[in-house]
Length: 129
Image 1 (cartoon, one colour):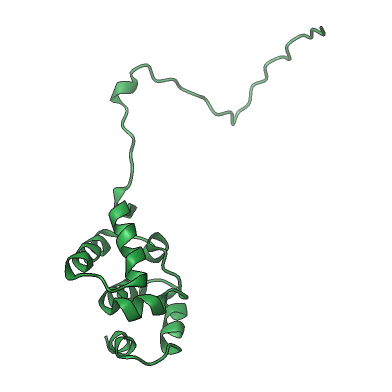
Image 2 (spheres, rainbow, N blue to C red; image 1 turned 180 degrees about the vertical axis):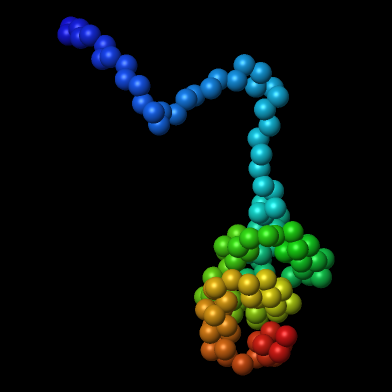
């Protein structure tokens, strides 16, 4: 077995100091819950891409949309390619999401998809609002 001497300790000006808290019961974890999407909401938005939602389910999604502060398209899994599915199945939800996306730089992609969609009653309703 090979033994060696421990290297000397060097002082570093930018060294990070680790502090162990002895009273860890007083520490609280800070978490921003405003960007949290509940599993029920995730399930509803996945269903919204595939089928029309009931009025009660739409209201749950609307309430959750009002709570969101940041990138709702990313949190809901909405991409420009999925927008036509949402417009055809749930135009009111797609209108609300597009209104929220108006403040982002991604809105032009969604508008391009919306303009190039086949003309249906639902797509005209979304464009008019």
